[in-house]
Image (cartoon, rainbow, N blue to C red; front, top):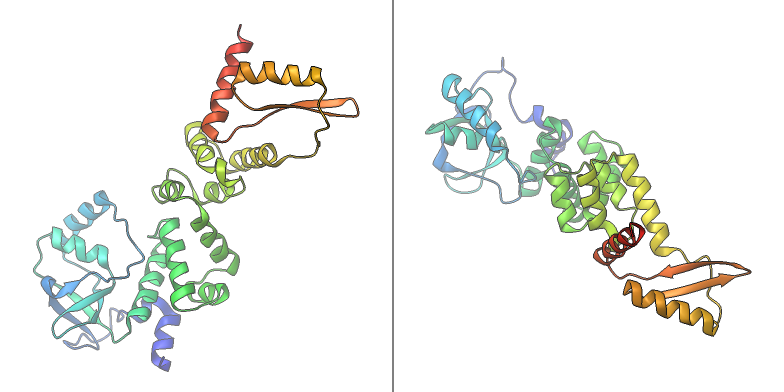
Length: 290
């Protein structure tokens, strides 16, 4: 990578677009006009979701006042250009019925373009937590950047990058909940504290109950203790114990074990899914009401 390119990546979006008082040239060094049919979205774009209401509002503004900030592009063909920064402005311009828009053309590679697009979106806080995590993952794998290097480029600290990447360990359904703001990134990380078999149910309960991140953490720890506890070891059951186990097993429809150690014991009920746990809890609640 050339020194000039390193400087651009280090400075972010401000390095891509000339200052307002810079001379405007009809060349690759300044702002020029391109037809919209010459411009295409990038194959690798960190931002995947676009708020339709905000897009329509921006379109109305562009229709009234024009596009005030140019879109940043790179040449990918004889007369074809790929967007580096400003896809939302490009989409809104199409909605506004414009035929051409102002652009700044930059000579960067595809991977450098992705990094610059990510910097722009991070600076504008336009990415949802999952899009951001996916983008950081791409930089780590494809650009082979460490968490420290990603943090330096994004203007974040290393812990922030590491915590963001942890969200990708969530099941796809929960990632969608975070991406669509049904759950916050903090909720997502709290749910990761629970065993994998209980995470989806915990996510649904968090949304339904409107739980805070702290409450979700507490419930995740409790669920982990419930599913992994093995502090008491079973001893050989007596015939009387086995008879009680059989009665409870028939009543609850689940595997039952009486655990006894030095006169202190417990009833152990096994379940294999969160749906089964819900069934058992409902059954116990109905028995309590009788």
